Length: 461
Image (cartoon, rainbow, N blue to C red; front, side, top):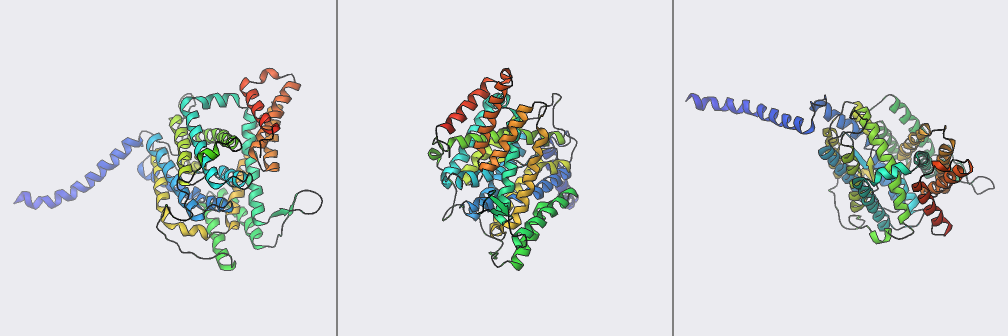
């Protein structure tokens, strides 16, 4: 009798014990206690990172939508890429870094590849897929280190600066802040300052500055939501399509497995694939190192703990993105918001990935956001990328100035590859004229010869 009467209490005591056992397993798997953290802190850090980067599910569909991609399909792809990449980073590399479709590389895909060069959407997705394959091969074979050794840092940082300027121009042009100048003089002029899109964009950008300065979690998203609400209230072009919808991966407008790999291998498109790879090499390495440093996840030699796994997770995510119909993937610098909140393990990234999976069921909101709601986010990211100027070493003026040439001509020609080619050309010729030809590596000379030949032969678009 006594045993039977005690059994309900034994079951009640067993449940907390089971929960404790599960938490202990989670702690051991992610090395949470070992890294000086706890489960609650990791979950809150994941939520913070998610709020800081969730604007991407609005910005990426908006940018690719301008190039003819289906908004709903891109929304699904963006969520899937962020979920896959972040879960892979968390469960495999055990690092508190979230992955998503990179805004800068999304701009390249939409405005340079599709709209600029006239590449079809399937070929563009093939280029994204190939970029991931090449980047993964470079990472796992050690070629990445060889490229990093032979590519000048000035041009690498100049590429980031140029993409930032490119994003600013794209966003400003999209809302009418600047417009084509049909009169004599420079090609652009100031737009209609009193128009709703222009006013909302400027005020939105200023609001983001203020919220980010105050470190408000999800500040960018809050601005997008606020401007979208104003647009719904006062702009007849903004219409309501509902909030919830079951995700579908087939039917009209689907981008799933629609990539054209052979088309991306053509001589006219493949150089753009290499440009994506080079940009990703430096962006991924710099971002991962910065976030790892903030989280104190560097070893005694200053190397990133499991950095090889982190870079591989980053590159493999771009392969997945090409398959599902998204833009090239990268570790988000917004991951630093999560590490600042105490994230030190992969559980932070797992939380981010799980939250992006939940977002799959609210795809109609991507139709509710006007371009002037996302323009402030684009301009803000562009401004942040201009901070690469601080990384230029002006003690080596030829390297630094060649990087600036790369940056300026990326935006002036609206083509990243063109800017890189001119940067390489100025670097090599400048070294020779200055008598510093010994500073030129064989790798730099070979890459310069390939790029110049490509343009001189008339194969560039």
